[in-house]
Image (tube, rainbow, N blue to C red; front, side, top):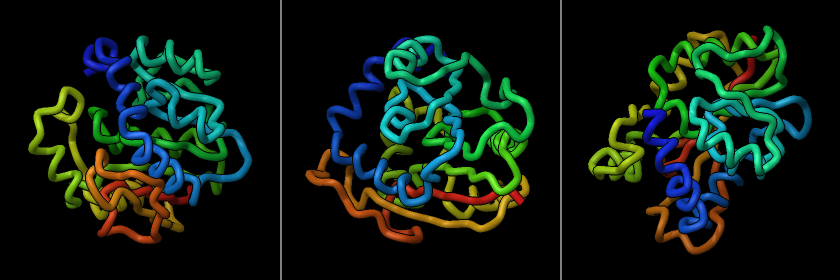
Length: 206
């Protein structure tokens, strides 16, 4: 999987230009739950598109190609596996995992590692393409370079994994109410889930 992202890192990054309003809509949904201040980490920072736009200063990723672009965008990056984070306990005020959770080998371990590096009361923020939404169903059928080997989650499934890792105080926002290439303006995010295909889940470390 890492080789795919290394080989196609520029193609991956170009998607956000081609689908500008879908990307900007996702940002708006994430901003609803992202802390206004504090030390943040993005797990699976990729090319730094989200970290740069959201002011997340630190990022890790297993793809060297992706990290080169993220570094150019001003993100403090480290080459690392998301299941073994290279940080001490209680380091961050929040951790963001945007789409990445569907590409890891052990999603529960990634969430547990997030909990470990978070301070007490710190926030985990996970953005997913809900497998039960129309876009999730579309991606599961489409033979995509990136999503072909992805493991999709429903919001309910991921909520249970996050609860098991020791989080509470859940909040949900949703966006992408039509296919990405059909969105011609920034969508206003809505609370909850079940309508929008992109769902942001926020929870606090107990």
